[in-house]
Image (cartoon, rainbow, N blue to C red; front, side):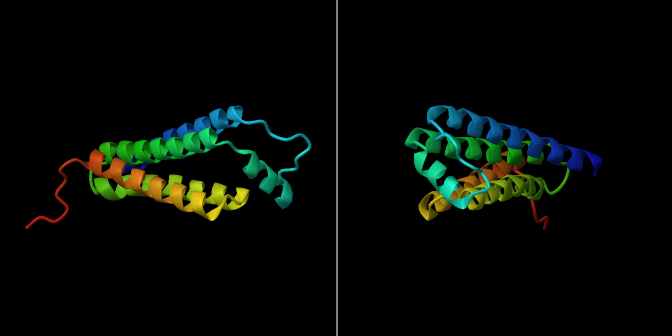
Length: 138
């Protein structure tokens, strides 16, 4: 039980670090206009419009890698319910992704793309990490 919890926490922490690294790296690819206030909705809209395509690609890749690794590591370290444990870790990354998308007010197309790819990566990592686990014994 402790191994499952610690594995899930480790997986989520590593996944979030990867996502944070990708966000930090993508911010180097475009210039943030001067004088923007993060608490102002209009300023956040200006910031989102200034994000380049390359930065958005890095955001998508970073979220996918973070969700995949979170699901994979949690599933590998778990003793039982490997797929479920991996999906829980991946869902934490997905919740963080959705929160960022809502707070920054990204366009609905990018919102759908990033949410779908993060969910798919979390499932793929969990499924890969769980290996050939038999869920129902006959």
